[in-house]
Amino acid sequence: MIQTTITPFNRKLNSTLTKKAINVLQINLGKLCNLACSHCHVDAGPKRTEELTPEICEQLVELIHRFPETKIVDLTGGAPEMNYGFKPLVEAARKNNKQVIVRSNLTIYFEDGFGDIPEYFVKHKVRVVASLPCYLVDNVDKMRGDGVFNASIKALQWLNKLGYGKEPDLILDLVYNPQLPTSENFALTPNQVKLEQDYKKFLQDNFDIVFNNLFAITNLPVGRTKFHLERTKLYKPYLHFLESNFNPVTVESLMCRDELSIDYLGNVYDCDFNQMMNIPAKTRDGEDITVAKLLEAENLNLIEEVQTASYCYGCTAGSGSSCGGALL
Image 1 (cartoon, one colour):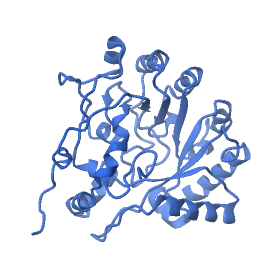
Image 2 (cartoon, helix red, strand yellow):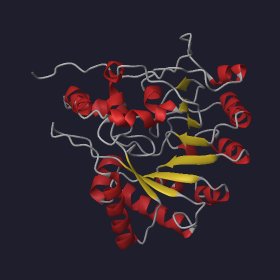
Image 3 (cartoon, helix red, strand yellow):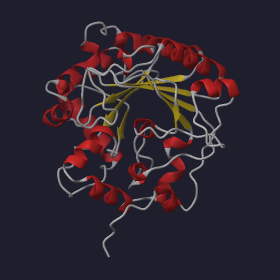
Image 4 (cartoon, helix red, strand yellow):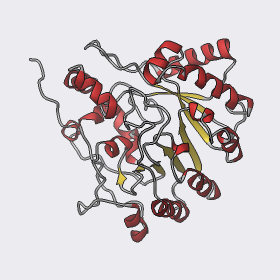
């Protein structure tokens, strides 16, 4: 019998998805970006104006100072470098000996006013996680815009020249995203280990580029990806495909379990995808959570149960998926 409905994710688990102790703060500084990529789940772009306010930035700096148990501050956007509060948050995190991850589109370094960013990254030992959804020019430009591949290559060469991918404290990771599907011939994200080997060989042989790790990420049906799937009448079939490849072994390592995702308004979510779909994290009493409430409670661990939705199958299909790539 052909399945016609999606099994609710929490029913598939046969239990609630519980939160662990929080050690990652992932902060979305805003939706402003110099690119408008076709697969962007944030729906970011040059015309977006939503960004962090001084008040929320101050609260976030206080949050970083007050909770030593958080080990990683993960900055995203939009292009995080373009949005208000970027440098204060980097510097607050580094002052408190936390690892700072910046999810960079690479091309931002060539925009007016941002040419200092690579050297700034070096100074503060920022871990750069850079989007390069393929190592072939046509595929990248199709997803991200004309000329983006060549600009990305120049940026990677610039980072290498500064020591990224070579020095042990200057980590450079790349992110692979599959092409958006155009038919029901869906496929799981390729094996991350093999794909990383292919990336490293191609980029070294053709551009003399080195990097540390490749993160292979599944396209979740959120944001522009969801819009594309709906427009091509592939949304439901894609969800069925993800559910049919559900792997329960991935659940233990899901990123939503030990992180807080915080938006530019100071609202708290379990993950970046819930943030984009406006599904807030809840306290034990069912109340929404804000950065101000975390500071008032003097406690990051107010969440017992992770809020789930059908797109959670994207993080649990096959080898799993997260902002740090495959889970298995």
